[in-house]
Length: 383
Ligand SMILES: *Cc1c(COP(=O)(O)O)cnc(C)c1O
Image 1 (cartoon, rainbow, N blue to C red):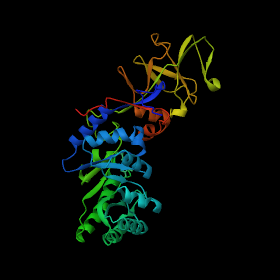
Image 2 (image 1 turned 120 degrees about the vertical axis):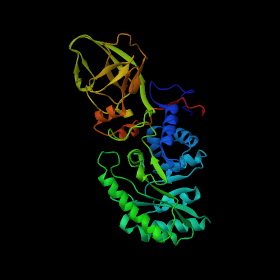
Image 3 (image 1 turned 30 degrees about the horizontal axis):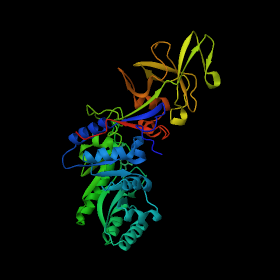
């Protein structure tokens, strides 16, 4: 079944991806980035919910060196689509995944001796010399070899003829807040490792540390490559990090009015009867609910209709939410409502949604469920 929105009718609730904005964000990022620094476009988790294939195509056209991914499945989807650029898997690999990575030229991070040996064996039996990256944990205590134990591991890699050390990386626990003390401590630990490598005469092509926050605020840590995710999607990682004018959000969430109810004073709305009409009210039903990733709120938030804010009333359901359109008399059946994004002069931002969820912008982007189809717009040609 081809669910392409130009062929199959789009459900009256969808995620809209503006590929022209994505392209423009990539251009602005490239313009900001020193010429010799490469861009790894991070497209894990379906490109933060935007659709990995569309994003990868545009990012490639705009000069990304390669793509950052989390799982083997994510990487294989790009390879199956004919994408031949470097794909760097950012997490930890199980042994059973390694031969696949070798066969399909997926670059893995090797962070402990067992993986080094197993990957070397898989590469040797495929008659390949495969590039690897070492992830150095410099204080975040997530993936990677500790900074003060990294050199022996790197020597082990050097001793394996079927492996070549292409990259060393680390990841910041906090790069987008005003206080950079810990980020700078992490960077100095990373530099200790780099100095140790230099002293041993080990050359590394790609030294990389920065995510979006680091790219914006830690220019001394750019080194050879930056790994940018959220900023490419037009969302700044925090409210205090540096701004690049012109960066705009790529994702909007939209729905059409699927029912209109007229309420008399004292009548109620939705499960649990959490809203009682204080006067005559006109209510629009939008066919999108917590089953699509909208937070399960009551009488909070809203939608934009005809460029005006319609407050959400009652509790939200799996497949529906209700908004008050009493003050928007021109609103009619199947009119477009914006759940997240811009309409007229009004905007509901990703950060507004994050507040509603008690969460962060990253989770808002990735938690719109895939049953909301992605409709991409403005994606046709490179200009
Ligand atoms: C997800 C991820 C990134 C991208 O982070 P953003 O803040 O979205 O730019 C970079 N590096 C690693 C290791 C990651 O896991």
